Length: 254
Image (cartoon, rainbow, N blue to C red; front, side):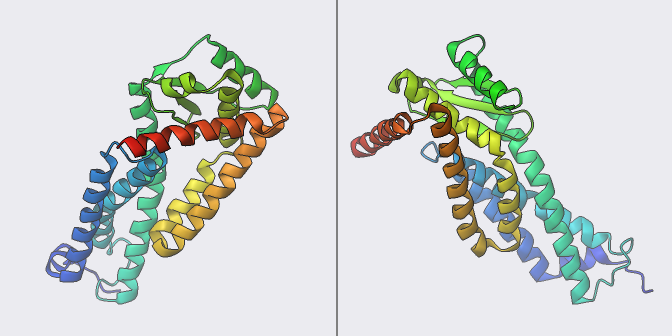
């Protein structure tokens, strides 16, 4: 078996490999830039975070696996070998991204928010989660006037709501939104995110259609959970209308 001893030199002397690295880092930079924009929604920010981490670490993995061709018993000058190295790099980048991104996202929001304890919101969530055999859930209040609610199911489940949401909605409407997020936790939406993230790296075009389908499925299941618990959909619908009107008015003013 031929032994590769010039992987590093070959890598830096090959224009298409350098091009891949530069393109990946350009995408990472653009994703980071968009991530810092305030008008981007929380869900889009999470998608951008996934993209940033994946495209940032991919070149390092690609180079590491390329240099490791000797240990992998691969022939550096064979296209199939290079393809395999690239696929392995993408696979490892995907796995690392799905582990790192949710953790960073979760900790970043926890640092900015206030953890709620012994409030009526905690009591409602605790009662509901026990009845539905859900795990312990950390509840956090975001100091923002905009109505915001989202959950992070990876690691320990966390549910985030904003001051603006609490002020905007009635008690029953707020409970409907909380139930919607508990529905996401119940159905563990992170599993769908893992599948769609992996698909995004291997087939970006297919990802957009799949992501929309997964998102609609997640939202429908979360809505169904809220309606089933409250035995009516009027509170969830009125909450959605109020939030939509808020953002519509905000966009009109801007």
